[in-house]
Image 1 (tube, helix red, strand yellow):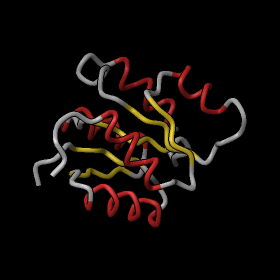
Image 2 (image 1 turned 120 degrees about the horizontal axis):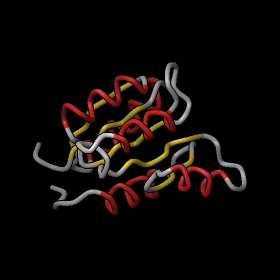
Image 3 (image 1 turned 30 degrees about the horizontal axis):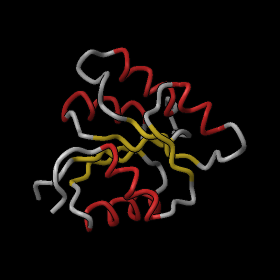
Image 4 (image 1 turned 180 degrees about the horizontal axis):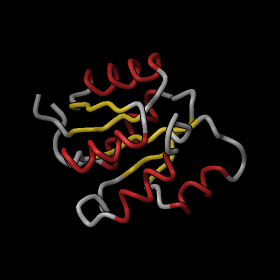
Length: 126
């Protein structure tokens, strides 16, 4: 597969499978991480086209992982979308203010997810 590469950072197995299946069936290549620390390592190693970052993770949270990525010149410009069940009034704005490039709330609407992924990934989708 030669489509854009998306790193999915999600600690829930069921959600991870859903994201992987949806993205891969739409022509994206996926990488997977279940912790913020591993996500940072994979971004540095692979420089994916996009990162879908869960906020609540078992080690460092998604915001801390984002700050590490933004502080590294090698990864500072890779788009990172907040992926979270935190969907109260003001949450979207708060995550965008932290530096995320977009926001996707859970439970995820598949059409919405693919739309925002397409907005942030370059290149044709097979």
